[in-house]
Image (tube, rainbow, N blue to C red):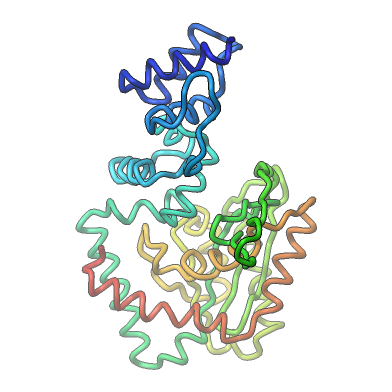
Length: 345
């Protein structure tokens, strides 16, 4: 009887035009611990809005509930455009869906992977746009003198989280099956909280260094400087003559990258720095090329430990031909030209 009562309240408040979050808050204040969860409230709110359920019956056959409806996706994108600093949890509360749903919308539908990297460009100021254009022109001018020489000198890198498990997207899970046979089943799983921070450096020939941060350790200027020292040794061992020709280091404007100790280390090693404009993941090969491809390959695979994650990442890079890495570096030219075309927007 309690279940029917809950449905009746949800239906009544839905008819009043109230959102899922409002309904959940009002029911929580009345029912307390016996209040249905957000997922259940959302389910029946959607069914009643679509006229596909009654109080006593289960949902009528028909199109299954699509949590990521076009309306919800548009609402999430609108909220991001209004405030690019919103966190996933805040978006979930504002839209009235679960954190997992927001995660899928951001990654699978809107293609957003980094709050500071993917959302900020939409809010660039005119001076910031001009800075992007100037940096792109400077890079292209450098390439005009000796394109191959410049591209082969570039070493780029960045940090990224690698999860023990990232859910397989609906598109990735599609399989061929004979007409008339039941479609393959996919069981619902929860995302593992396990993850590890990886700092990856690479060039046009392949990966050079992968550093995994130990749990509880902060990435400081000193820590990053120690990684740069190891990077120099890796270049010396793997790329004969590269240090002599001169390394062009391309990394973003994270505080630790610009710290005094890191800059002093770069000066000591003789590395030149390619100027990278703020809020420009489109001009960062790791953000727009390497990391998305790596994570797509690892998506749907489950790892039981950090060591298994490390082995999978190493295996991924070891399996790639030089052309894979060269393409990622070479795309800098195309992306810089596009940046200039769109006036830094």
